[in-house]
Length: 594
Image (cartoon, rainbow, N blue to C red):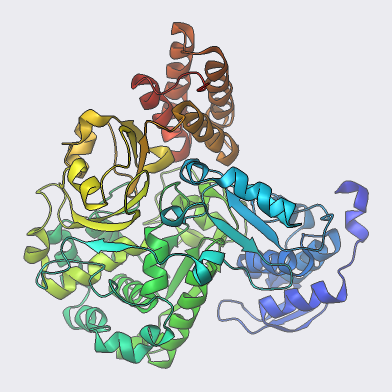
């Protein structure tokens, strides 16, 4: 990059147009910037630092237009937003979807997932086939399409990004155990059986006809204290993996002072997880309504959606849903007739697993590298832009809608005492019917697998919780899938992925890929994780070549796991060794099959 005379480079006319269009800029010069954007203060150079949160959309515009982030384009973005070029370059190089070297082709890029489930389904031959057809191919971590593996995402060059399976692939399977009981909680009840390709299902009129808007009406009628009281009484915990009590989080933000934010975290990058993608594709207005419920309850004026860059259909439908919600009066200066302002903006991520961590997400939204922050302080007091912030994923937010619909007592009538309600499980791998399954907390693992068409072949292992989770063996089929039971068993539900492997799978290859995943996805900010994930991958690779692990290698992996767990800044380092250690304990880390 330095050889390209960074400081002297200028954008092409097409790059300039693309960036200005993405930013909504009517005019730009060295001294004045006029931006049609609700969160930008109009003014000159001194005020441009307030525009830094538009850096990610600007970089997306450059990547789509030119196929890379050129020095001239980056300089132009920096001048327009008041971001030093070196800092803008540091942000651009952080993300998987951005390129900072000129491509050797003028093509859209086919991202092919090479993580375990897609590898089992033939990702390698698919990638070779695409290359043989003259396509540019990038081997990618999980693309969130595990129910229809192997997954492909097309990153457009001067065209929209797209997922081929959205147009011609098999329809994703949705199953809910509780959908047939109207008085019980079910997130999928209204989505099952609908044709996802029919746009009339996504209209405000159709949504209201199936009960849409009732949660927002109830939230405004009940008021802040009663909504939070019901959420707390229902025992709702976060569905993103940490399982933090939602009522406590909302109460803390509601009690905060000054400007507040609500963020829907849809940067669903945990291998094996695809639930939030389907929720946003099939019921985007419900997601928007749930964000408005959260915002008006805690007293926020601004909501944000941070969604994976690899989810183009969900992004398109959420944007349309936001527009419909504004037209219906749900968002704006008098949101839903509340007398209070609340609006929602959407931001696309750009391929960084770490940005699923809430404070890394804040940095990304603000236009910085997506690196986690030290905690405390916590997001409830010092979140996005340093203000009190609620962060929840769509599954959690939609559960609030259900609690307001049926009440906390009925909600607690499903699930277990310690884990009330239902959980969305993402079933993939060697099962008869991969898909999204809603089941009460506490359903035994074996029963869930039976619901999904049983294991195809002889069960070797199940990975619960994704790459950050743990392997369990065939003796765990009676394990109740609740927060407390999995915790007592030394494993986790995480965000809900259930990845199934039969005895035809090369499990040592699976574990090596998981170790490689964490090596690649570590943001590198803290030493224990930056070094630990590299050393872990090296040891796992040596074990595969040699056969079974030696005692010394076992001790080394335990030591590395301890150091990462004790001293890493965020959850990535804390859980990066979980799958490796659990697989080793089950005897899965062995020599390659002959």
